[in-house]
Image (cartoon, rainbow, N blue to C red):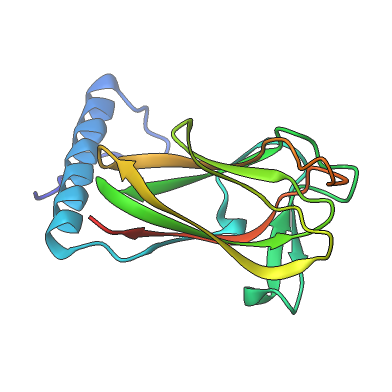
Length: 181
């Protein structure tokens, strides 16, 4: 589709007609992108922890750690500052299909059970407790179905903890989605 620019300048009042025009072009561009993605195939979708779109709860911070892949990870605060329900979200364009998710994370004595939700539906959950800290751990979940292409909210959240864990820490570096079907 050829996109048409209306004649307007910074400071102009955006009229309802102009807004309708912009919304129409946006909708057409989204369809064009989805069509192109379906035609050429989809590369893995990498979501790095620092590229979040919103913090729903908690005090999230980036930590430098030279023994963790990529030399850093995101967590939801210092020990005893993390809370059940802390969450951070990422907006990601995902074409329809079936995916395998892999999360690069850390296990530790103060770690939570981590859930990943896509558009408010839980797609995986795992316990990251371990008596000794383990860097560079991978959690993999296959068979995640995205029914319709579009912008998705991928949420990482603390959802309880192992009885032996001292806190609700969530520590991860990145998530990767591979389209498998």
